[in-house]
Image (cartoon, rainbow, N blue to C red):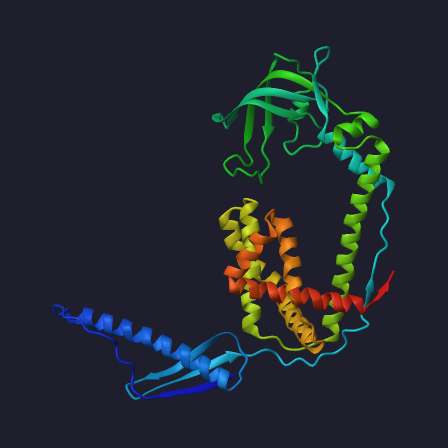
Length: 396
């Protein structure tokens, strides 16, 4: 959509004047042009907002300004706008999606107990035998790669295990005893994290200080008391069962909600503004790249895969934009509104998540109106989704 704007009249005079030594012509021109651009920017911004408000034009993002004519007599330009899509709302009541039943299986409870046993395991020194698979070694070592010193560590812990990344490392230490020195030779994988070692031979000079055996606690009431405020093993099991059930219920509810939203999108098709999709895509790509950096993926690999990442995320960006417009339209149709209590509850939830007081969270949003507007939109979307869920059919 484009709108033609015209602002007639003289250019505004600059207030005040000062005496100064004459500047070179290039500098006078530079400052004059810079001042002119600043005035032009303000005039366009003000006149555009006023005209859009007068014409009751709702638009998205910033306008694309073209064909600017700025003289002493007038200012004219063309503003190309992205406007919200026209949505003819289809079905959103009575949608159906699968709601899985929640059941805590015995093996899930056993796995939870096992993880706790591992976390409180004790390590006892082994003196009457040599190291075996499953033991832990405390050792100093030096490593050389292709005959050159590469690494030197002290008091490192090694778990001797069959399935390991550096194949054959543990097997060469089986049978070692405290005080013994051993040479371990391995071939680094071709895709090793440290490129300078990839595919090369590493030689480790390992001096074993201790051999330790992991001792797991017996599953009894004493074990329950060690793990927290639980007097009996049954009390601990009931606590874990409740945690697992809560987590599985949350997952089932999320799947149910996603199923309803997928159905909602199928029932409501419309064109979405390309610019909004592009902006959302940029945000998704930035998040993806940030995650890759946190995972220590090399920059050259990220840059190489950037186009592929963008192509893969484009459908998700369009889906999110489409859903956002649709939820907003449903909220308006159902006349769903927010009360101050809705914000207060969200402040509490955000406070718990970020370990801050609700007052501190509220203060932030009060001081940042744009952030609060974004939060308002988020809360309203959640309210619309809850409305859709309340009016849906659950299948099992």
